[in-house]
Length: 379
Image (cartoon, rainbow, N blue to C red; front, side, top):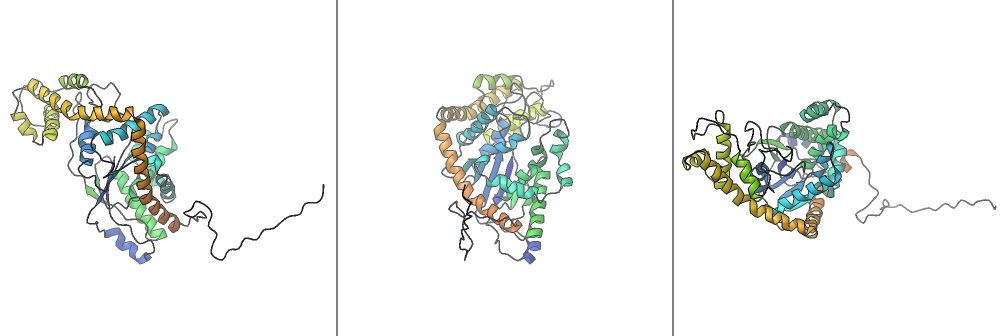
């Protein structure tokens, strides 16, 4: 997931002498704009809901939220499954409470500027820094590894820089990619003139880190197998949620005490309940009589939270025209912002455009067409 806040764009005509200052000085607009993207690499989980979607609804005015479906192309995938996952993720954005009248919700692939700026940044990045990215080290280097897995950090950087991001809240698993976005912005500005706002890395705001119910030492991942017993999906029905929580791993001492290191299973259930009830894990544990009661309370609260979202998702999927219409409107809004930024970048790096806003070639001022007719000999 990508999360950032944006401010007003820099002046593309600014002198190069301002580049050094741009590296250090940033000004947030009075109303900052949030930008986040989620890759449709699997069915969204309770962790995605608590850590992202529910928070989106609290910051959605003038915000941009997109399904990062181009990022899902970096590994093997089934096209039809990707199409369904993309639309399902978008539907969950809306079902979770995002209002398309307030927030801009769109598909990454519907804004071509993401791809174009990614290539301009690939032309700025160095081979060595891309080869050091942790994701590529973990997943790359095998037979059949896709080139996009190597270059996708440039696409992630484009996702951020297209919207003039200033402060970027980041978790540990994404900090390296956001450091690269910052490095590329500085390098581009130094080589070609002040073009991008250089994002600052900011400590991530507290979000609930939901852990796997079957293995509470690991996070609840949307990339886990579809039948993973410890992963609550946002679209799970009540019976499935009840079964997964009932089988959640705890411990054998029977003591209701909040200690994430010693009692991670109990702590995980308490943290989930605390996030959903606006309490603290300690308050949650004080309110129940035992492990069974804790699991039952967690089951009831999770179902009450997710069931309305699941029903709204079903309505949107039953009428895809409504969903696609909202996404089309969002994409048009996003393009008005992103196109202006990529136009700055094209001009700065030296890419000539012969096509004007009308979509047809605009001849330079003072140009007069001269037609030369070559006479062919008679046959």
